[in-house]
Image 1: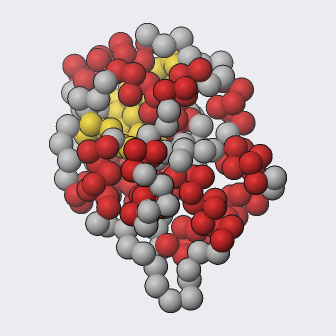
Image 2 (image 1 turned 30 degrees about the horizontal axis):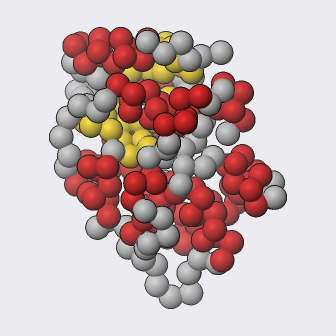
Amino acid sequence: MALRVLIADDHAVVRQGLRMILGLDNDIKVVGETTNGREAVRLARELCPDVVLMDLLMPVMDGVSATAEIRQDLPEVEVVALTSSLDDAMVMGAVRAGAIGFLLKNAEADDLRNAVKAAAAGQIHVSPAAISRLMGQVREPSGPEQLTERETEVLTMLARGKANKEIAHDLRIGQQTVKTYVSHILTKLGVHSRTQAAVYAVQSGLVPAGELTPPEALESTTREQWWSA
């Protein structure tokens, strides 16, 4: 089965370009497209895509609000935010809403396809240009809510792009245990998404900033690996 993608962008030429780029990969299938956030939410509920490519500036409902609603109602659907310009509030808004990826619209075709595949695997994919905008927004926690050694280990692996299944395998624990650790990490850091947590990991020196972007080898990931992530 191919990865199912929903495109939400109010510019026809952008939607056409995204569809063409994704259509060159047999492992990706565009199942729908729309011009506003409200329709994106409706179609996400109707089509249950694996990934939504979400423009942040759209009429009726903006992409940040639509992302938040989709992630709340359909947590199995991942969102990759798209924008033509970087604005601190917009970048942070998308991440807080639950976007797992963030790309500029001038990204290379391979980067776009990799971002979709990474999102489907539960892996973070953030444009290097957006990382610096996020750095100043995530602060190191203080007081008794410091991360434990195991939570720090899970956070480091998460920030390096590993999915829950990979983390569970490497640490020899169950996937549900990994999810519990991730939940505790988000709570202690006071953040709302894996992407924000990963930015904290970079900010605190746990991983280099470049490791937020999954490796080129993701191109060879099998569909079975995506579904089991």
